[in-house]
Image (cartoon, rainbow, N blue to C red; front, side, top):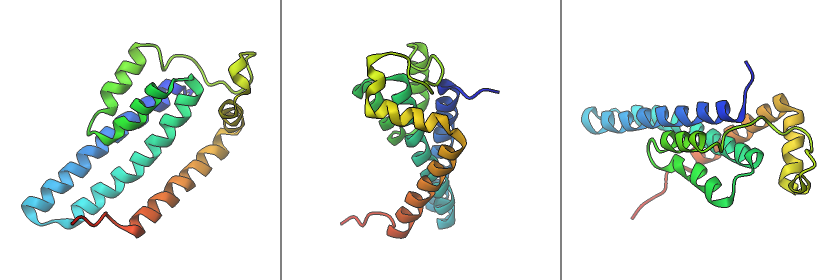
Length: 153
């Protein structure tokens, strides 16, 4: 099975929505049964997938040459529960997820942009990129866990 920009984005958009359910379920269990661990588990899984979705959205946005508005919508949709699903459907319906990865310069003048050059390096070594991205997400996740939730009031 070939992983396309569409299939990768869809996978993480759905996973992000599913993990919202885990987080919300954990919050309900904490409120009704006093199970704080449910929020820790659901929130932890959601946090990791949230960060991974962000990396995926940026990668696909660069590959698909989305404008700033579309890119911010795709990335920002993760903040609103379940919003990644309608955003993914809209992106697919409007053709913004169509096409393959761009591992080589196409002759398009935009191929000389820094972001496109970085994209070609990433796509030339997808396994290495996936490993580095996973370590980066895990590191950021670990730092965020260490810092803890914001103190309000």
